[in-house]
Image (cartoon, rainbow, N blue to C red; front, side):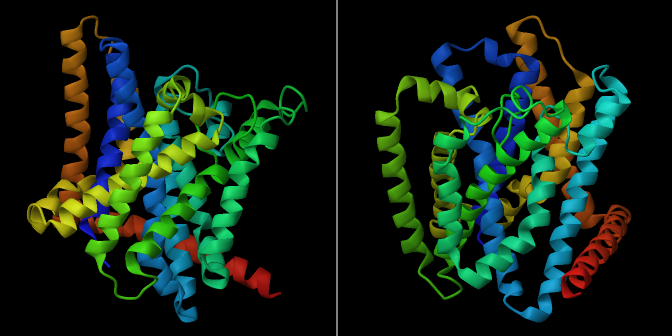
Length: 390
């Protein structure tokens, strides 16, 4: 089913993510008052949980109905693994850009980073998506076999286990693992003393599962459902929970959410706040675009180009930030740099979207790339099937 509000929420989240990168890169965050800066930082931090949660919603909307047909499963798995390879290739390109322009990225460190044993500014979400997309067929298999309840229980148990797992010895400082190996442990589990931005694979899957639940709620598990009544109830409930939560939230939690402290230690509060706000944003966008039908479908389609160019934006938009490296000295020049950079990123993604959809040259080029990754993914899926059958 096509719900324009979901595309709008995803596009808004990606806009906020790129705005936060521009905010940090230009130093604009040093000028507003502390209270305004904290509120804006909190809004920026909601972006990542939103597009991870909406990835799960997309799995429920688009891929699970196809997965229900056993004959279609190899094709679905191939498509998802192909997208994972595309994310990994774009991640590798962004690391190559850092290798060319950043003295801190030596050849060995860059190779290790491409193999998920390092860290990069701003593009770690591509690494996360590369792994989660590759895991998506397994997630769909579990969703189809056992339903949502066991997945929800397992993901929530992992969050609750933070109380115990966060006290375990650190992989590098206490257990003596090499730095590269400790980074992999932190990336997968979310635990350890290394300052990696996250979210980890295990914790991020909680948001993916919540997205599956949101998709199932909106579609009624595949049955026809009164979307207006569902969304109105969801918007009211999420508004109530968010409002009460922010009223009773201690100041230190509010601050830690905005400055990424909760995210970097994989605190359950980060994912709880992120999930509630992601659901609220999605419900609000659906309410505007699909229930009230504010604006035209063509207008919504034009405005939601970020949702169609997310991988391109996260790769090439951040590579632009790597290359420019502005150093403004005044508020005026800082604001000018921020506006120019964000406008350029938006323009790049907008015209890329138009070129893919309207230009035969660009469209055919993208299809060739897709055919290559599709063949690689098909080989991987078939090889895994043969091993499991033998």
